[in-house]
Image (cartoon, rainbow, N blue to C red; front, side, top):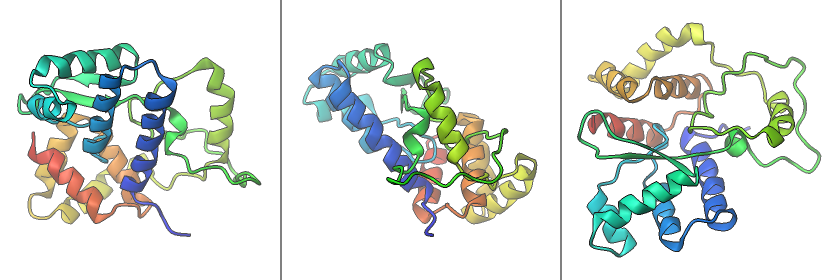
Length: 216
């Protein structure tokens, strides 16, 4: 069975989030256009984006960045995105979709998933770190989803050894790349380690990681 790359999984989660914004939310047309821009710029490793506000203003067809700021605050108020000001000062603001835990999952076949013989009760869900939001009405469904997932191949105790291998993949400045990514969010490193352990890292994923590190 072909292993999905990290970018493939994130693209599926992104599409499901965008569909909710467009079809199931009370977002205004401008806010929906802003959400589309976030999806277009989303980095598959950091799970957020940081386009310049003048760039976003042009995408929205406005000259003033205040329109961008209002749209961002509106989506945040609706709990559809989270906003974070970049500590380095290079990226004015980082925008992250608020996804649901199951957004990364593949569509369930008509005959359902095969249940694993052993259910991992310590599933850290490293790939579900897109500022997830819990809903009490969905807890039972989420437990069923977790039970159907295969046992994760990433052992957190092996993280250090995997980080060394990741650094080699990034090249001569690999350790610097990892350090920069960790300064954004340590969860990024865990996602990369999980993807490496599953054989799911693609060249596109590595390029996205380098891009994110370069802006720090």
